[in-house]
Image 1 (cartoon, helix red, strand yellow):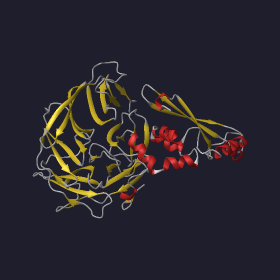
Image 2 (spheres, rainbow, N blue to C red; image 1 turned 180 degrees about the vertical axis):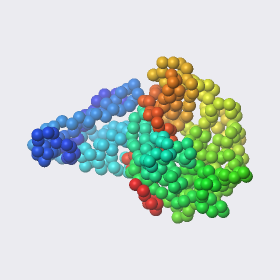
Image 3 (tube, helix red, strand yellow; image 1 turned 135 degrees about the vertical axis):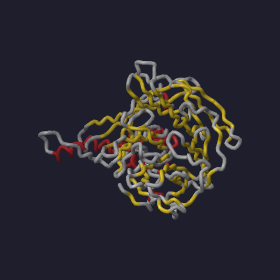
Image 4 (tube, one colour; image 1 turned 30 degrees about the vertical axis):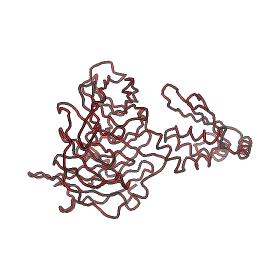
Length: 452
């Protein structure tokens, strides 16, 4: 069966467990709920051939308990859980986003077992695209000390929402850069919190220690953080970059292995005192963190836990916006030629410092704009898709307002697809490359105190 030509597939999924919904007025709740146990579900999967996106519609049909029981008995005599072979069913489910898959676990026990299996989560993670994390901007003097974080897909649809207590992100908060299967924020107490979107847990990391300088004190240091992964061991590590606030500026760094027995340890000095982590000037490629410093780039090797001594020259002027990104395991520098045009430079050889400008991309205003003039534009490349398209986070100002959205751009055909407009009071925070079907952080974070 060719799945792309499939227009509609209906899968008989058996009876649903009781959902305990609110009973209608004038009915006895217990009897009404018992009648709902006779429901069975047909799951209809629809494909739009234009974009190969899947829409999921769950159609609930009420039947008498006897009829549902007969359907269940008939299903138990078959070898498959539905009208489709198991391998075809798995292939279909792997194409769905994580949010509807989590809901489909309630269809029946066999589906729950399938969708909770580790191999299914691994296969789903390999097929699905990364997600975008946004945080809600709040004034620091608000009585509410919690922070809302939204996780969205490329269409701008909400996939998961988390709330972190004792944490408010604003312009004075320390930035924590991450591009892996976790999220990090700094709380009001200046302690790092690791967020696991798959489970919703928030874990406290040990207090940062600037080695040979004593405990971290926010009054004397300005600290940013970046999360990376050791290419040889697969360990997840957090790099703290502390800049001393004094007339004689110095920068000190410490590193921590998540789940490791040791604490913060010294990791040398960066080649520039201006190094800091930010979502727009930091990128992680093959075990190395890159930081843009004016017209140069500093590199930190997670495998060796050392800074590379030499800065990489960046062949771009500094008059306009420049960002760093990782596309297809390659370091990429983007340069804004204008409010509607950007260049993408790829680092072909990091040792010989050879750059190649591979794309000049024209970015028209948002499709809903009534004006071709943009007062201010940000095009931040985030990741590349398997078919060569590139996902951008876009912020554009036009007609007296600012819109934020995701844009998937094809550099060969110059076609693009815009997602829904995001909330204006939310700010781009990080890229999440994990799966919401299972947690990959349980063992790493089990030794830390969980706050949620």
